[in-house]
Image 1 (cartoon, rainbow, N blue to C red):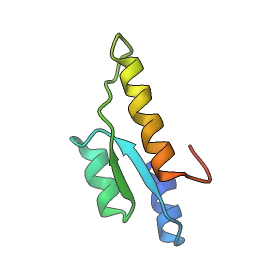
Image 2: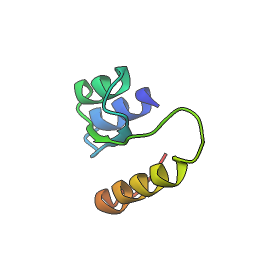
Image 3: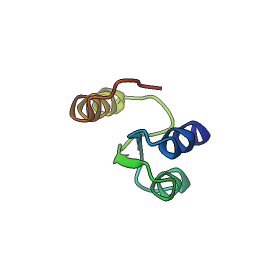
Length: 69
């Protein structure tokens, strides 16, 4: 996914990646010139999944992307 986002950003597209603020992906996204959308999500499903999906849906609605990967 990171290669795809980097290639799209390098091509001049407006790219956003939703991921947790901590960790290497968030740092890489910012260095690649893409917009980082902080998305508090865990690696495993559980009772918190509904809230994670709602937060992601809010990002998608706010960003209004043409394509979602």
